[in-house]
Image 1: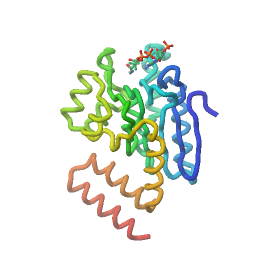
Image 2: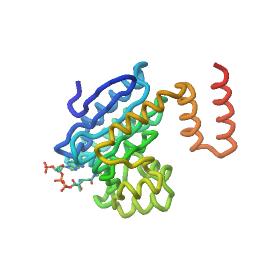
Image 3: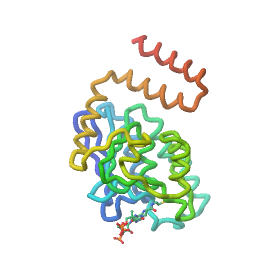
Length: 238
Ligand code: COA
């Protein structure tokens, strides 16, 4: 049982719902800790084949880190140590299973940084996505300065990060930040249908292809091609 999340597992799909709807699903320390636990649980559960993240309520996937906790960590050193020990975003990026984010309403700060650690993002037409940290005097710190330019052209990422202004779902689709935009009432149906498509593909092939893309992004082309050759040989070996 979680305080800040809902968890549901059905037919190979794990649904993880950020569940503080009155506060637009702001990610507080408790939610971060619970995400750390649940992501490890889905990683280790052989019945889970695909994971879908979503937000509770009508208004937001998540309005980002809980602003009311800013400055309340025991100490700067302590909070940095906690982050290093429980690197939630690194954990998500290391998962071999496909992760999908189903995004509606506000997806701001960590509320878009979490989906950027997923493999695929579907948004509903009402989604507003952005990294507003600079307007609060911070910079994104859940990976956004690094993940956003890997999803959208660097100039678009720079514009979003330096202005802090959110973009709408259509703009996010045009720049490739989300892969599909659907009417709000179809969002979870479409996410589930995408999950089922993935589950119909070979699980080993999915795992190896995901790894080839993610690891390859950090490599020079020649090394990326060598990685692909190795992984392709592994797919053929079974
Ligand atoms: N942390 C903590 N609480 C938050 C929050 C956050 N990131 N985002 C929203 N909330 C809370 C509000 O304080 C409010 O709580 P209350 O009803 O107890 O007063 C509730 O969620 C509803 O938000 P509200 O601001 O009243 O809604 P709105 O429609 O006027 O504005 C936003 C919506 C998203 C524009 C606005 O809430 C906002 O700017 N939030 C902060 C976004 C942000 O900067 N996130 C990045 C943090 S690094």
